[in-house]
Image 1 (cartoon, rainbow, N blue to C red):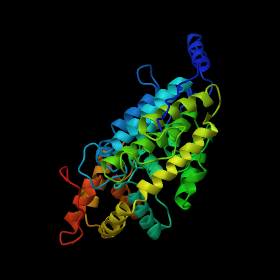
Image 2 (image 1 turned 30 degrees about the horizontal axis):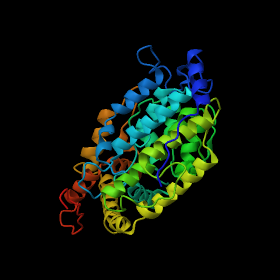
Image 3 (image 1 turned 60 degrees about the vertical axis):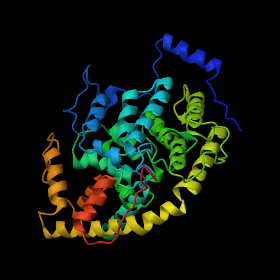
Image 4 (image 1 turned 90 degrees about the vertical axis):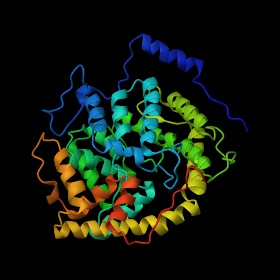
Amino acid sequence: MKTDYQSLSPELTKRILSDREKGYKNPYAATDAGCVRRDPAHDKSTLWRPSYVRDIEKILHLPYYNRYADKTQVFSFYMNDDITRRALHVQLVSRIARNIGSLLGLNLDLIEAISLGHDIGHTPFGHAGERYLSDLLHAHTGSYFNHNVQSVRVLDDVFLRNVSLQTLDGFLSHNGEFEKQCYRPTGNRDFAVFDASMKRCYAEKDGGKFLIPATMEGCVMRISDIIAYLGKDRQDAVIAGIIPQDYPFRSEFIGSHNAAIINNLTVDIVTNSYGKDCIEMSEEAFSDLKTAKEENYRVIYHNDKLKKTYDEKIQPMFEELYEKLRADLVAGDESSPVFTHHIAYVNKNRMHYRAPGDYALEQPDFIVTDYIASMTDDYFLELYRHLFPNSKREIKFRSYFD
C-alpha cells in the first residue's frame, strides 16, 4: 500500500503565517531569562552567545562528543559505513525536533542542546551494553545504570560544565522507551527537585519512567527521539540483512518507512500542538506509533541472531572488564588504563568554575562505570584484547565484502 504524505491544513498554514507576520511569541517557549545554572555567576547570556547556545557549545566541545561516531545505535557487528551510528542519530533527532519546534515557535537553541547531548552517556554496544552495565553496577552497589542519567552525570558531575537545568532536565527526561500521546511539561523545577529525581533513577529500576520534561522543548525532543529511530532502524535492518526491503510493517497512518514516518508524525504533532501548552498526537498517530515500536522490537531489536551474539560474547566481556578495572582501581594500580586513560583524562578536562577535587577519590564502581560507558565499541574491544591477551573470546564483524 502506497503511503500518503500528509501536509498541514491550509487553515493551520494560514494561521502560522499570520502569527509570524504579527510577531507572535509562544508563551510556553523557554527563555534565556529563565535559564538556571548551578553557578549563575558563570556562563551568563550575551548577545553573541545566548544561554542555550552556550550549552550547545559545551556539548560540542566536550571530549566525549567525538565518541558518538563509533558507538552503536542498533547494529554493532557490521563493517558498513551506511549503518547508523549514534553520531548521526543525535543529529537526526536535532533536525526533526528543530523542524517541529520552529513551527511551534519554541526555543530552537534549547532543543538543539538537549538533542545533541541526550545520548552522551550512552554505552558501547547500544541498549545491550546499557543492560549489562546496569546489572554490574547494581550487583556491586544496588544502584541502576541508565544512559539518560549518565548523560547528566557526564556533563554535570564528571566534567563540571555548568550546563543549564533546562538542558540537563531534557537529558534526564528523554527516555524514548515510554511513549505518551500527550506530553505536558511539568514547569520549572529547581536543582533540589532535579537532584531528587536523579537519586530516584539510581535507586529504582524504572525510576525514569515517571519523568516528564519540564519544558516544551524537552517534550519535543523526547518524541523526536522516537521518530528519529523508528524508520532509520528499519533502513539499517534492511542493510544488515535482518529484514527484507519489502517487510510488511503494519503502520499505515504514519507510514512504514523512514521518510513517511518523519513527515507524517511531524505534521500530526504540529497540527495537534499548535497554540497549546503541550505536545500532542492524534489518536491515530499515537496508535500507529505504538504499533511501529512493537514491530521494531519484535522483528529487529529482539532478533535471535543479534541477541545471541550480544549475550554470549559481549556480556561476558563486560563482566570481565568491569571486575578487572574495579580490582585495579581498588588496588591502586596506577599503571592500569582506568588510571592512565580515564582518571587522568577526566582530571585534565574538568572545568574549574568550582573546585573540582580529585576524580580518583570518587566511589570506585562509579568511576569504572563512567569509564566503560564512555568507551566506543572499538575501544572496548581493543581494551579487552589488551587486558586479556589470552582470551579465546572473539568478535567477528561482517566485512564490507561479505
